[in-house]
Image 1 (tube, one colour):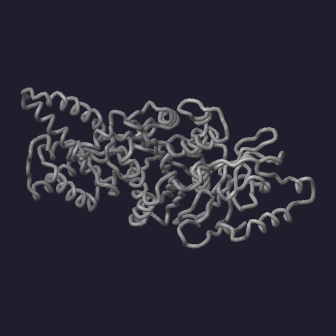
Image 2 (cartoon, rainbow, N blue to C red; image 1 turned 90 degrees about the horizontal axis):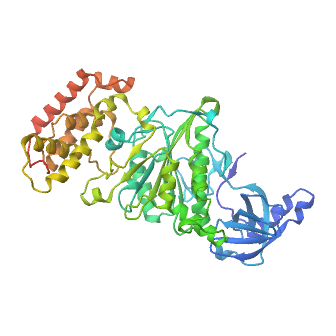
Image 3 (cartoon, rainbow, N blue to C red; image 1 turned 45 degrees about the horizontal axis):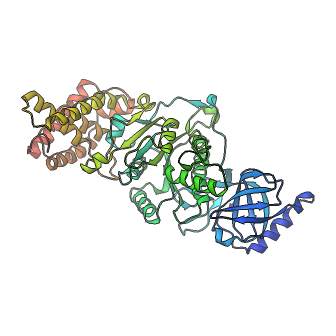
Amino acid sequence: MSGNVGRSTATPEALLQGLLACEAPGPRLSEIGHVAEIGDGIAIVSGLERALADELLIFASGVQGMVLDLEPGRLGVVLLGASDRVSVGEEVLRSHKVASIAVGPELLGRVVDSLGAPLDGNGPIEAITSRPVEADAKAILDRLPVTRPLRTGIKVIDAAVPVGLGQRELIIGDRRTGKTSLGVGAILNQTDTGVICIYCAIGQRGDAVARVIAAIREGGMMPRTLVIAAGDDEAAGLAWLAPYAAMSVAEYFAGQARDVLMVLDDLTHHARSYRELSLLLRRPPGREAFPGDIFFVHARLLERGGQFADHAGGGSITVLPVVETQAGNLSAYIPTNLISITDGQIYLSPRLVRRNLFPAVDLGVSVSRVGGKAQSPALRSVAANLRVTLSQFEELEEFARFGTRLDDATRARLARGSAIRGALRQGESDPMSAREQLAVLVAAMEGQFDGMNERTMAEAMARLRSAASDEQGEIAEHLAEEAPLTEGARERLRALAHRIIAQHGRQTDGPDA
């Protein structure tokens, strides 16, 4: 069935009369309710005893609502439009449909709201079919282990916190630590992979969403990306519904054996919108005023991701949910909930941001519980000791701050650790290919960047990346065959880095430069 997903241009009265005319003969014709109370984003409706959970209701003013609470004599309804358009006493009609979103390849390259209505001004979307925004997660027997890598193009993640297709990896950190940049960078690295991408903006400012869209379009990924936006000036109900709608679209593509990457930015705003709606509906508040089912709200969403068996579609849904912390407090209610639901977390540290170390991934706290099995063997053979080396360096660096006299071996270890940390720096929206990552990491782990100052290292890495992109032969074969890096291939990378650095010249500035 095809239909126009855009907002209807019919008057509210005509819409109401049309729905009444379409009703089959019988008792349903008398099922017209009335608005008893109005709140900011919610309405209490009476007179619709047969309404179902998650059913869409049509208000006489044209606003749609979704049934959230079922109680004797009253319905708690989440408004999916401006609440000031609804008045007490106006008529409400059942739609006999659950909240759904249009799905299909026509959505790719578009910006839509939580109900699938276009926001980009490029005309209506012809929907092939639709799916309910709420759906059960796939059963265990319909799932497969996570064994294929999702290359994010961010070397510190691909090397030390690898993510696999079908994994749910949390991105967590304070404001302005680069959480969105990590998600957008992962999307931009899928230009040659065939992965479908969905960016879901929940409660974000309009200018922030516009910058993300511009970055995706500039990176050439917009034709394979859908943006679902529920801004901070939209109804709280739309913000609450947005990630479920995004997941329904992802399930459509996964059911066609496609791999989908979804960035949910962010679930902190999602939890707050649900708390706001719940308190207005007079649900009992619990810890931090969140209702008792807030864990289930996120669990039933994220459990829909995964790698699916052939009989269940054969595709995968990789989810990168974003959550915001305050003053690095990882033990707050929502962060701890999401940490326990997901398969690991990438923690962005304000301490590293203050030192201008981007991406500010704290490897001491970040972990990937299932992605290690999906990591490229070539990259694993190079970065196996990366986390330990950096941890030892940071501990040694703390002792060196006391100004004690250091022997030559300690200075050498400090120089090596500083070089590795510098090699992990990466610009925003600048994904790196697997060959580029291998070349830079081999040079750093082998000590060829030791003693370089920051500017010289950046120039050397840029030249090395360019040379590695043209490198073919044995290294490319290892990456294609998913084989460990042999000593011969490692030696070729060493020689490449040595030649680049020798041609460019070496400028040193101490181990802490």
